Image (cartoon, rainbow, N blue to C red):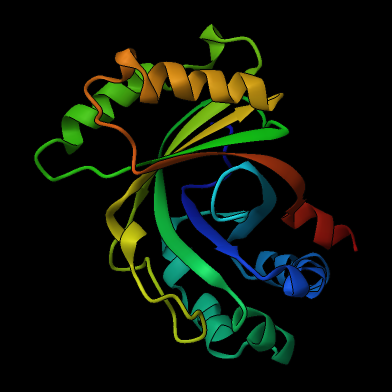
Amino acid sequence: MPLAGKGMLLTSMNVDVSDEPDFNRWYDREHLEERIAIEGFLEARRYVAHAANPKYLSLYSTATLDVLDSPAYRARLATPTDWSRRTMANFKNMLRVVARITISKGAGRGAALGLVRLRPTPENAIVWRDALQEKLAPDTREGIISMHLLESEPELSGTTADIPAVRNEGARDWFVLIDGTHVGAVSAVIAERFTGPAASPFPLPVSVGTYSLMWDLAKSDIARN
């Protein structure tokens, strides 16, 4: 299983151009390491949009889903740093999703990421999950490293007191992650398996996007420091 752990926190947002330098400095110099230091967090990855909205995306892997409802994590959410408060106040189009990693195939992580957002119903969830077992096969396409399914946990997803999101749209959505060596390979799989004639049994996704990896951080990295 190429994704570490069983739980995932996905966040994405836009910020005004004037706020981007401080926003990126906060993520790179404080926020990622602060989150990875929490017990049960394993690694984090930051992305910037190639062709996607929102512009910025972060993925945090956790040992179990329960880590994302643990006292240690809740305490950190309740006591953000001053820098965090200032930065989060500038978030726009914020999406925050806590999810289970239910499918993960392949080995490794790519420099490019495809993100496909699906909206299942209780009636079609089993059929969709079975179909995705077939669709998320990375070894049949050049340039694709690994593919994964995140299934949102409604009770844990959505806004928190210090994240000014006005909607909880992602609370029941699924997110397909496609790790590839370049954007072209990722885009081709999205078109072939999720937006073209072979997408059945899925309707058009809620959204699709491609991202480029900015950097990643593992628990072992901060342990060495």
